[in-house]
Length: 258
Image: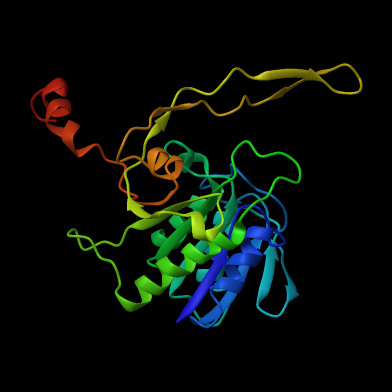
């Protein structure tokens, strides 16, 4: 078993270091991650310029690119072998509901799935923490190992014959305080807050994207609810964005021949 580890917080982030340590013994581990924080990069690929890959230490590489770049390179010819599984994380911050569309952590796993690999994204619910507030990356990494061990022992294939991307969100708690694991669906948030306008040192306007909106669809069964209640949330994601239920209505709307 060859396991590729990536993230969007950068190869020196505490979360990826904890994840690598937790996965020791499950196979040959190799890290390919961005050279710096690339949160919010989503599924972007770098196409307008070449990418540089540097080695930080044995089996740890960093890329001047996005999380998707990292996984794409690692699977598509950077090494004389292909990994069997892609595990992304542990992200410093949850990836719940709508977050999955923007998340570089989830994007790294998604790229692995695009390329035919078993894929897992692991995030720690540290939302709202400031400064030196405690972050339980060891807890997130522990549950990353639990999921990977289960996938190795019993590969997960859905009724469609296609493997899902497993999006794992872990409450920021000591391991002993986590209540268990729940299978969930994605919830969603209210729209994000207004942009934040500021000025640079020369008095020119600059803008910050506003904070993410509060949870909206966050009732029982959602990833938001599970994490808030102290459970690990595991949500199967698909890369088929087709709204299949809307196809008949769309054909009728467009008229005959559509």
